[in-house]
Image (cartoon, each protein chain N blue to C red):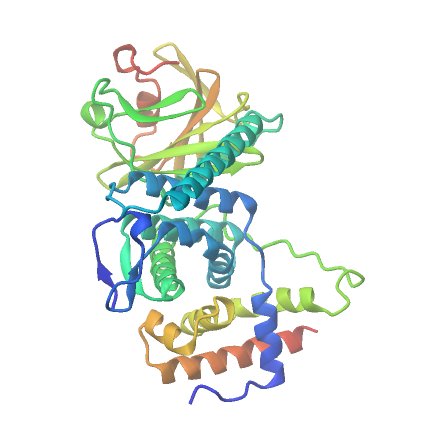
Length: 231
Length: 181
């Protein structure tokens, strides 16, 4: 039933589709990292005892794996902070993307912060103060810069808090400059989204989303959590 | 039969008595290339394909399952398809300002004497003209490489339905390729 011959013109289609585009290297790296992360989070299950030789080979493999992880970490570290920079607009667009990573848990010892940091910036926890609860995260690369985004949700509104590695980037020329609680922010519109950019610990942060009141983003961005949120 | 299970250690991803095996995270990255091509075939956009693959793996890793022996790819296709449906719904509700970006194909005649690179470009362009159900069928079989049986199960359709969708999809893509030359 399924062994009917395929005509040549259809074979040409199949050949072409099977030779399609290659996945970018960064996607491979992310999948490997997610995979390693998932393996770490899985509960430990007692493994059956193995012969001594296999145990030794296993140790060698683990050592090799660690070396590979260190090499990748070194490459990532060296790639952070490249000279070129993405635009704030592109960073703001990340807030429309889906989350691909788990929600960072709250930091029990420091309730104003989440247990997730990137490039020296720890993401804030706004649920108790403002009702915006963290909901997922994602990692990206924009024009050679690593970025990490944590999403927050309040009723049906969703915003993204993106931290861009490397030197600060310029806001768009038409952005409005504000000062709130001693923090300088730049605000602009992107379609239906409101966007504010600001600096924390020398990194550009972009807070973006579709909110009722554009001042909401300013209020969230400039919140210091009684000193726990560092700038 | 795909059965939900509690997360397990990858070390014990061994065949069970029923012929199924627990999905081993360590084996998943080997499917990235094929899954990316299928995601690109479905979405027609390189950034979307990246997001789709990443989200598919995130979903699979967050809920390890028992899958048939050798059925990992079919399971990934099912999750990819569900993820794509969710993306499409979300996009309909919230327009994406960046829009879809197709891969920037540059084909030089000298560097592609057999014309394969040009065929690849035309075939993926032709995919975008297909109705959704035909695109899914051709992505599952011709792009991802599933057997007819696996693809039909993965898309939850009868094998006969899959065959007819596949044949029509191939014909339309072939016609597009010939018409574009």
